[in-house]
Image 1 (cartoon, protein in one colour):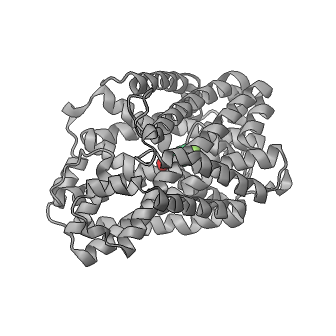
Image 2: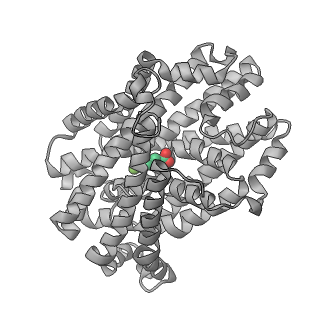
Image 3: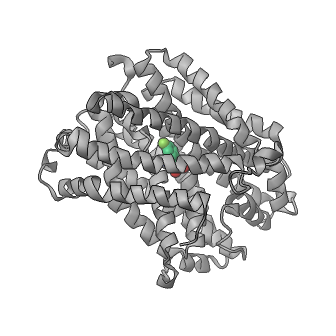
Length: 457
Ligand code: PFF
């Protein structure tokens, strides 16, 4: 086991886990969901979900990983027996499928960056139809998503410290710099105040059950919980580290980036006279229009920075998603990391092809007859959303009833002597035993009902 690698220290782990957490959902899904759900109200509920329910799950997941010192499957098997190992496999498979579609969307961001910087994208007259023909263009997207996955594999193949840690040490600070630059610019625009007001002044009449449902789902996805990605990263954490401290930094950093993304997007949207409630179209249809209105030079600089930001957010998430199955094959099957990374990347790329082709290139995949005429990529994204929350629910059950809370607490007390008997310990025990499994169980059922039958809460 000794040659499987470790993060060099606290900063290495925190950056890598933060990189996994900060992703497309922070820059894309958070602002559009906030826009659709009344801005500030959504933000408040989201914060409550993140800190009250998701933080304890993150702590538990990292503790499992560090206690076992091996991949997700190995960890569940080691701490709970062979049957629980299935939960690890479930996570590994989920990770593979998430990466298969996530990489396609990351490829779009990469493609927009390339076409906006080097092509005439900003001269388009209709960004809605540009997006439709862009995603339909399977040849270009083949290379954009292959390129993105290649960069992901390049980091993972070099191992924990040299690859994953180094990539995050470059990408995370760059992401912050671009984000802050874009915020400062957007705050200078006319009408920026309107955007800020919408975002920060809550209107409690907007609260619906749907708001809570969307916020909890997003919070769980954005923190990369439930499938064992953090078990895997946790297995590379040194025993001297304080898990509670590291998890809180990761949670804060992820939340701050989502918050800042809203602070960047809403002034831009309001200053361009657009609606904040455009939904998923926000990033690929509304934002380019806003960049166009800025004029050719500024529009190009701001637009290119924006799509680069998306790529910088997506890459570390892809890296963590690839490391999850890679660790399984390296730890369990003892295959060399080099071969595992390239072969798995190829398999994942092939698995992503139907998602890539589901926007027109293959008409049958665009409107699935058995899935309410939705596209294949949405199907994979929805199914993995469900496996994520089911995985999280089962993980809490595993900790409470199989591994036992006192073992988790013993792990958490290593590197954090004051943890035992603290209020934090009591809170984590309570949430992992009762609140989280219940909430995540209900959430999983609601997502299934919502996706397959559809209802508005
Ligand atoms: N947290 C990533 C995001 O916010 O986009 C997505 C993600 C990465 C989910 C890694 C799950 C995971 F294991």
